[in-house]
Amino acid sequence: DHILLLFKFEKKYFDKEKLTNTYVGHPLLDKNINENIKIDQFLDKKNIISIFPGSRVSEIKYHVPILLNFIKKMINKDSKFNFIFHSTNNTKKLLSNLLLKEKIKNVEIINDDKIKNVVLKKSIFAVVKSGTVSLEVCKMSVPSIIIYKMNFINFFIAKLLLNIKYVNMINIINNKEVIPELIQSECNADEIFKSVYYFLKKPNLIADQKKEIKNTLKSLTSPSSSSDEASKIILSYIP
Image (cartoon, rainbow, N blue to C red):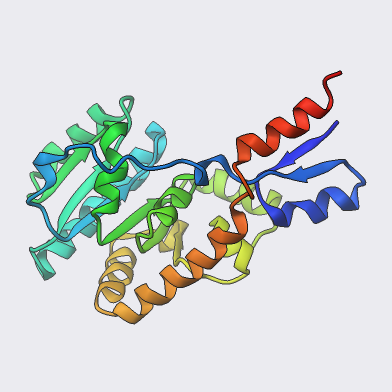
């Protein structure tokens, strides 16, 4: 067996077990963003805060009520912000129904993958569900915080099985909280509001976060591309 690694820090664990491995890089960081896509309906919008509530129905049910209360607090504080939920085709209807019940202004949903990254790049901040999508947000150099909430039993089991201090990959690699994490009990409207508003009022914090993320992403990018690096290894085993 030959294990292909997405992250450099993984190598020491496989080396310890004497398993053949090679770092190839993360394919998400290879993708080029098409910025020529027209997004006329968003061109007049400023101060966009992108929100990634998750792609699973359970994540939507847990996160969206909290996020809607966060949005209300932000609008009450300052109505200049526009909030755009990044959805999937599978969860858009559920998300739309939850938004309709609240009748909040300045909120929209997008589920077209062709325009998501363009809207994200136009954003001044992002509230992101823990997961791979956070790397995409980092690649676009958008400041962010990480959120996640699950039922207590699943959280308890995860804590037993995963002996890690952080959930976000950027934080794990740096062994410190570069991107604030609001997990479980801290994942509530008040804490999200405090974190986001504090960041937006402190440009120096945003600049520091962007700088640390940029340096971290450099260490995750493969010499050519992850697909090229992986192909070389696979082809080396073919007679």
